Each structure stands twice: as C-alpha cells, then as structure tokens.
Picture 1 (tube, rainbow, N blue to C red):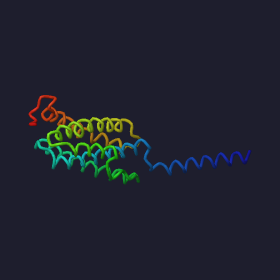
Picture 2 (tube, rainbow, N blue to C red):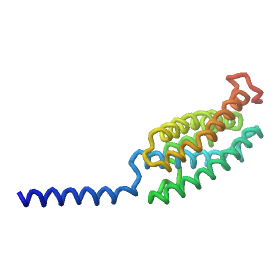
Picture 3 (cartoon, rainbow, N blue to C red):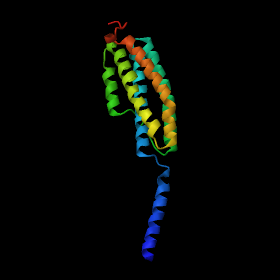
Picture 4 (cartoon, one colour):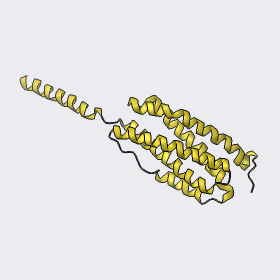
Amino acid sequence: MKAQILRCAALALALVFSGTAFADKLAEGDQEFLEQAAQNGLAEQSASRLAQTKARDPRVRDYAQRLIDDHAGMGAELQALAASKEYTPPKEPSMLQKGKELLIANLGDNDFDRRFISQMGVEAHESTIRLFEEASRQARDPEVKAFATKHLPMLREHLRIAQALKGSVDPARGTDDKR
C-alpha cells in the first residue's frame, strides 16, 4: 500500500513537472501556422521582387512593392513572436512555392503580369487568409492567435487589390493588356 502511494505521488510529480517543462513550448498546430505563415510571406516577397523587374504594368509593380513592404513588416513581427516562443520558423519559401515562382519567372512579358496577379495576388492570398482565419480561431497560444487576427485585415486588403488588378491585366476578363 505504501509503495503504491509512493508510485502515485512520483507519477503525480512527474506529470506536474513535465507540464511546466512544456508550458513554454508551442502547440504543434501553432508551430505549423507560424511555419506556413513565414513561408507564405517569404514566397510573396520573393515573387514580388521578381515582379519589380519583370512586370510591365506599373500598377502591378506598385502592388508588388506593397507586398514586399507589408510582408517584410509582418515577417519581422513573426520572427520576434517565434523567438519569444523558442521556435525558429523557416527562412525561405517551401520547395513548392519556389517551383511556382520559377514557373512565372520563365513566362514571357505578356503573360507575367496576369500570372503574378492571379497566382501571388489572388490564389496565394486566398490560401493565406484561410490559414490566418483558422489560427485566429483555433491557435492555443494567445499571442499567436492575436498575431493572426491582427494581420487578417492587411491580407484581405491585398486580396481585394489583387482581384481589382486581375480584372485589368487578365485578357480572359476583357482587359487593356497589350499583346
């Protein structure tokens, strides 16, 4: 009986101490959010730097500059948040994202603007907004949740601008794109 009580006490202490050891660690879902958010932001910045030199439409170049500026600021904030949680997010886009950028990089001048806006402006922001909306509802860490919630309006504005640009650079939608 005494041995059983000691085992239970030892188990209880182990659980208490293991709980505090993991208290500062991020939940797996929160880490996954930070990883994907970092990669998405880095991919948008990289593709936008490409657009600064390759886009023909000055509105596309202006949009690309806004993405560079906004995502650089958000990325710095993400890095600081991650560091405070003892987590190191990726420092570059995923391989898939790099491949998508390579595909648009090799497009001719007439197609680049349209594909950049469609792929990086609309599709990427729709995906990123879903990611941030989920984190704003489901993140376990309150600071991670606040980060996601804080940046949703900016991401939605990026999407709105891209959707408006898509209508003017996409020939399938009756545009002024000169071929």
